[in-house]
Image (cartoon, rainbow, N blue to C red):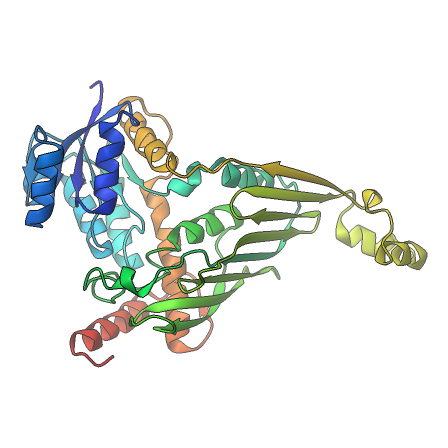
Length: 384
C-alpha cells in the first residue's frame, strides 16, 4: 500500500474540508477512496467536485466496498462509535471526529471492540494535540519544570456563535441531535488538552446555563470547579456568546507558573526555590523587600516563547499521522482510546449541573444516561 484510501462519511463542512486537503496534496500519504452522505444535495456537490470518486448513500456499503482502507466520521456525535465499530468489524481502519461519542458507555463499546482488532488503526481527530505550543506545555509539566500542580485555570470563551449558526439545521444545539452544546461541540478540544496536560480531576462541580444567550435548549455558558483529589483545584470556563472572548490558560505549580495567552504565547516563570522552602526560610526583611517590588530575579527566572498559529495545518497533520500509522506503524498523536477522557469529563460537567451537586469521576454512566435521555424525550415532546 502506497497511500491510504480514505472513505469520508458525511460531506458537510468538515468532510468537505478533509476532501479538499487530500485533493490539494496536503496529506501526501492519503487519497480519497469514496464519499458517503444521505443528502442528495451533498451527493450532487461531491460528484461535481470529485467526479472520479465513488459515492455512496449507505456508509455500510462504502465500508464493504473495495474502495476504502479507512474511514473518517464527519457525522452527528451519536453516530461516531457505531460507525467506528462497523468499520473495524470489516477490517477497515477508523478515525473518529471529536468527540468520540456523546456518553462514555457508547465510547467504551468501541474502545473495547478496538482491543479485539489490534492490527487495525483506531484514532481520533484531536488536531490541537499537533499544536507545538500545547506539546511544549505538556512537556514542561511532564518534566516537572513547575513542580507539583496546585491550581489550573482555563478561560476559553472564544467560541462565539451567533443565532444564525444554530438556525442552520434542526439537529444543531439539541440533546437528540448533538447531545449537548458548547461542551460537546466547540470545547472538546480544550477539554481534551486540559486533561491531557494536567490530568483528570477526581470531582467536578458545574454551573451551566441552558439557552442563556441563545434560543437553544442546550448549554451555552459553563463554569466548572475541578478537584484533583490532592488539594489541587482548577476552573474551566467556556461559552458561545462572548464576541470579545478570552483564551487564557494558567497552571500554577509549587516551583513556578505557566501562562498561555491566545494559544500563541507561553510565559514560564520558574522559581529558584520551591514555594514551601521560600515560605519556611525567608526572613520578614526579605519578604518585605519582595512585597515592595524588590529584585524578582532573585526569586524566579522568566521565559517567553512565541508560537505561530497552526490553524489550517493541524487537521492535515492528524490525517497524515493516521495514514502513517496504518502504513508503517508511526505512533499515533491521538489514539482513539484517548477520546473517552474528554467525553467523561464533559459528562461529569453536565451531570453535576443537572443534579446541582458535586460529581465524582469515574462518572456514574447510568445516572448520566438517564438524565440525558430524559432531556431527549422532553425535547421531542416540545416541553422546553
